[in-house]
Length: 199
Image (spheres, rainbow, N blue to C red):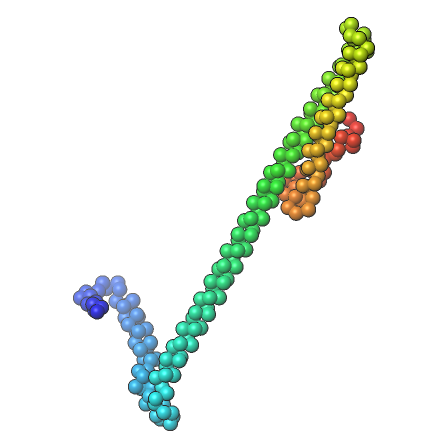
C-alpha cells in the first residue's frame, strides 16, 4: 500500500505562478487521455467490436516498450562504440609516447656510444704515438700487442655504436616510430660509423 501524500497547506507567493503553470500542464495531459471505457465507446461508434480494444491497448503498450528498448539498445551500442574508440585512441597515444621515449633514449645512447668511440680512438692515438717514440723499453711483441688491443677496443666500441644506430633506424620508420620521431623532433636516421667522416 502506498501512502498518499497530503497537499501542502501553504504555498509561497513566489511559487504561485509555477504551481498554476504545472497544474495547467497536468490538466492538458489529462484532457489528451481517454479511459478504456471511452475508447470502447469510440470503437462502438466505428462499429469495431469492443473485445478488441483492451488487447489493442496492450499491444500498443508492448510496441512502445519494444521501441523504447530498441532506442536504449542503440544508445548502449553508441556509448560502447565511443568507449572502444576512446580506448583505442588512448592505447595508440600511449604506444606513440612509449615509442618516442624509446627512440629518444636510443639517440642518447648513440651519443654516449659515439663519445666512447672518440675516447678509445684518442687512447689508440696516444698509444700509437707513445709506442712510435720508442715505447719506453717495450719489446716489439709488447708494442704489437698493445696496438692490437687499442685497435680491437675501437672496433668493439664502433660495433656497439652501430648496434644502437641500427636499432634506432629500424624503430624510427613505419608506425608508430615515424609518427613518434616526427612529434619528438628526432632525426630520420642516425649515421653508421662507416658514414662518419670525423668523429
